[in-house]
Length: 377
Image 1: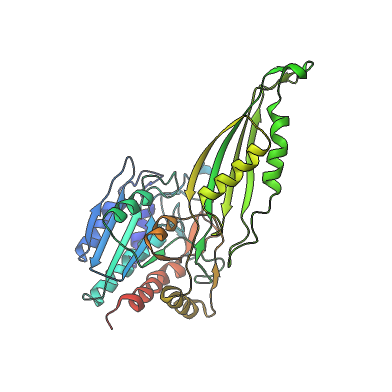
Image 2: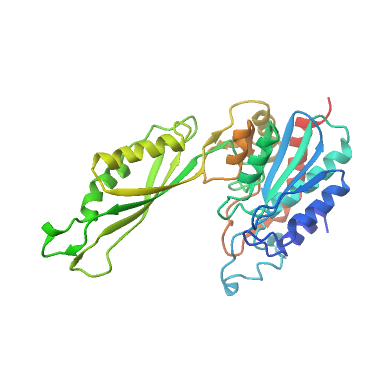
């Protein structure tokens, strides 16, 4: 059994449902320590984080990933136990096989091989792993990034091992991600009988025009390769189920996915300006999930494009699509960030899987990128 297959299977066997690392990080830290990495455990709340470094000084290249996985759902829905890795017809099945224990394992193997071949490489090679990417993402990379900022640690390049490929390994690289901003809106009215509307104030009637304005607004025309900013209302609730009672409050959830034309603070101000223009009696709670980031042309994008072209046979699509990733916490440290990983077709699904052929090639892919960035000239 190859090193990458053995390590990936060992990680899948650990039921590391967010935020429980289930022993993944100690296993990895033990391996990296033997390869000469300095390993630091950074635990915050219930979340385990690992910061491992080899070398010193600049440039600093970080390999970023997570060991936690989403719940598998009912066992009977799976063809085999989601935490017992199984190979069928050249495919490895198990929760986390694609998202992203294969990427984590490939990082470790690639790092081990690189420092063995280049013990005196230039700069710093670092691996940052967390058990809180699939959850609220408060005590994971967000907290570690704050610690690194306090230490004055600048990061030049970051490669996230999220499954980014669409149909074949290397056919897409993420060069940016949209920001995410969520809101809980509470519109207050006055409860009353529907037969006497003059004695009540219906918060639904009051809020609908404002919500319509927010939903219909064209926030911008996009940015570089980013799509336009969008707002989606995801939930609205009022009343107690009776058809003869005007409710006293309307509760609404909405989310904005936004490009670098905006910051969270400016979007909050713009949304509240609309709400205030309709004279609503409201309170609102904002949750900032992370600012957008975009990696411009430079050494990292050039190297990654060259390597993926060699792997896939054609130049990769360079995309800013998808949801969010922990790279949003690393980019503010000054880092150029990209995301490269296996095919994402099965992530978060029943019978999640990765092709063995892709898995075997993944450490080599990362290894070539690392070498072109950090190998001593």
